[in-house]
Every structure is written in C-alpha cells, then in structure tokens.
Amino acid sequence: MVLKWNGSNPDLSGKWCNNALAKPDASEKSAGRLALLAALAPHRITEEYVHEFSAAFPGDRKLLGVLAWSSFTAARKIGSWLR
Image (cartoon, rainbow, N blue to C red; front, side, top):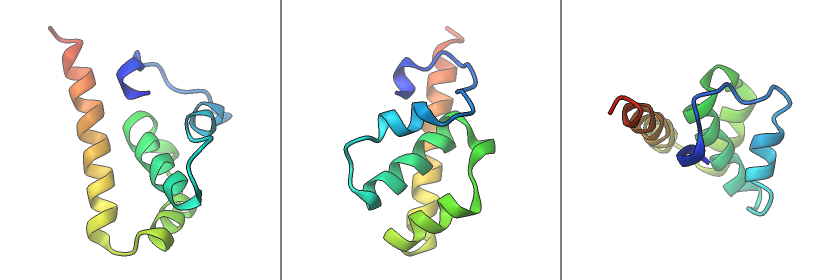
C-alpha cells in the first residue's frame, strides 16, 4: 500500500485501511492498522488503536518498532519522489 501511495491524504472513512487489512486476525490487524496509519495518516492514530496494539503486542519496544518502521517506510517513499 505504501509503495503505491502518491502522497495524498487517505479518505476519512478509513475504508482504505480496512480494505488493506481484510484478511489478518485481530492482533495482526491491530499491528497493520497502526503501521499504515503511522505511515500514511499519523494524525489519525488514536489512543484506542495504540491500546489495541499494546494488548496484542505488549511492551514499548514493540510499539516504537512499528511506529519507527512505518515512518521510515513513508520517509523513504517521499524521498524517492525527490529524484
């Protein structure tokens, strides 16, 4: 999804995120949602999403890892546009 991202702000409905996460189980879905939001719409991350992730994957290290990886992935994509 990030590889095809053109820099536009994803729609507010969240369908884009739900569609991308249709198959994973609940814990994978919480991780995927947080990762996609961190990469493409970080302003839409809510406390609820963080709690869902933390319930499935306890520990600050895992939370920071997902957020760091996602933001780095988005930054690499944006950097590719500068060439």
